[in-house]
Image (cartoon, rainbow, N blue to C red; front, side):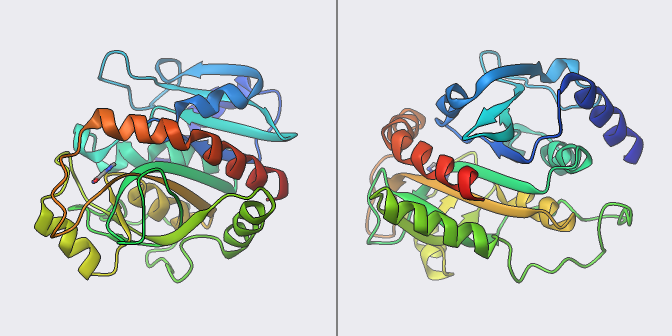
Length: 270
Ligand code: HPA
């Protein structure tokens, strides 16, 4: 594993003019953030040794390096979901590589279904915590002590400074943001009304199919994590609206300007 990480890191290092400070992982429907990068250097996943490969044709799969708000940012366009059949090791391998590159600051994004009754479609929620409901844990198995400890402190999964900065930015730029708990489920089905009800009952504000494994592995390596989620649909035991992937992408697209403003502010001040 360490050797596999090292090979990927060495290849990417050769392609980059300098060490990135941030990594930004793009979620469903949020790919347009890539356009914010100045003088982009694109590295397709196929070129990176040991990197998982995108199996769905037409899906993006590359890293992009460049500057946003003067900050050195590496972006991951095309993430690996557990429901696609990737192992947890594959889902989280990129995060191992980002740490290997010397990156300490992680910004994740995703689309999620809102279960907090005060949420609306198109809302932007910053994560204050999560609940891991995935069927497999990315740190199960022999611990690799060079990467992090056996038992990982998860008392502050989302960096409190980043959260304060995001709240400050939202105030300055007049953006309404929500703050909440993200519940990570396996998917790929959207939830039944009873399942949305469960998510609410156990303390969730939103539910999605990504992010949690990556955050766990980032925390294993003591990285600082910030995550922003776009509420793309609403669910609950009494609300039985149909949800479609298309709808998710449309709502993410509508929220894009707010997400861009928020992320740029966090990059600038973070
Ligand atoms: N459930 C799970 N994942 C999602 C949803 C949802 O309602 N919306 C976007 N991703």
